[in-house]
Image (cartoon, rainbow, N blue to C red):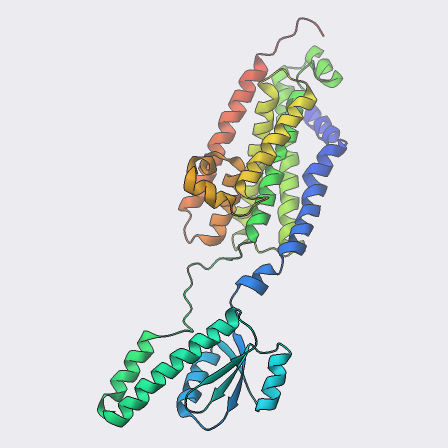
Length: 376
């Protein structure tokens, strides 16, 4: 009897167009829009790249040659240098192919056509080089014996090409929108959770009235509907994660197995929220759906789906909101997998989600068991 209920509950949900639209089609479309909007912003505006510059050597300068070699070679160079004559350098600068022209030979001179970050870094380099070169030249002329120590001290003082990595994960700030998109799909599982009451609360639909009059044990039908909702939400979350990672090529981190697990657990939490909303009141089905949608969108808003920096603002002024907001818990769990080197924060988030799911499921069952009808 359980499998019979399970089969027809799943078929009934698959035929509900609203569920297919909100849980599968809408997240895919929104994910595509996010990819178009944010896909290359990080690489173009935030991620550091070597600053392109043209070098015009007015005379041979071994000091500059050594500095240029150190700063333009390696896995993470500070500058990308093009050695050429002045005419070609001016053409490159005019066409925007380089950020500035470095005139080498004695004291460095710099020519730039803008005031962006690349031009600023070139100016800092030129000023630093000229100051250090003067110290080295003066020491070589006045006290050559101290020259090695001076060079060593200057080398330790400034290293503009040093790369300090705080994490091995993806630091793209715009990925939080995709994390929150998964949280939104998970909370839309509340629409499935409400169907638990639709199919088992006799005053909401003809099918639930027939179930209440049937000889089958009421708990069997309730459990079958609950399991069917969890299975449906699991499939929807799996589709969403797979689409983001392997179709849109969104970097969700190295721990894809745990990302799938987190998303599925988040979806089950969404189902539990919908189950509780549906069972704890006597409102009409459409009202329950409205409450569920308002709650889901408010949670996603506070988690940063619409405004990216709202979550840090809330963390600063009222951190408990982030600690109990289901959308924030789901997105933060995936973020922790991507950024943190250990699993401490991730474990705290997952345990909190599991506890909330268990509490809401129990409350939903208690409220459902209390439903009695004078007539049908």
